[in-house]
Image 1 (cartoon, one colour):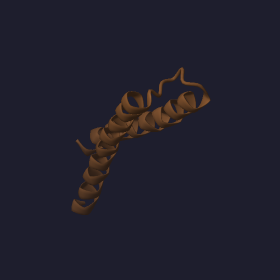
Image 2 (tube, rainbow, N blue to C red):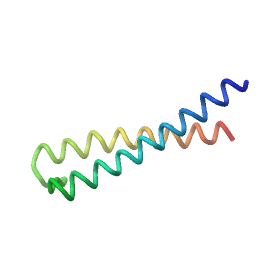
Image 3 (cartoon, one colour):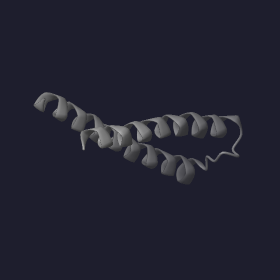
Image 4 (tube, one colour):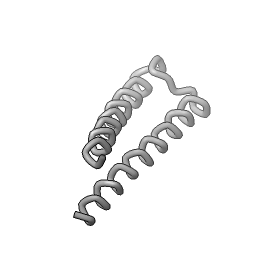
Length: 69
């Protein structure tokens, strides 16, 4: 049971760390490279794919948090 709780907590922590890196990556792409959804096919593909993955991780981390509690 302790190993399960530790693994679950570590998974949640890594999910939120990923979200922090994702925010940093979005800020860098927007500020340094001027990348937006309207930047053409690369911008729209980048933000759509990484955004859907971030949404998936966020929902998963929230669900795991509820399970842990």
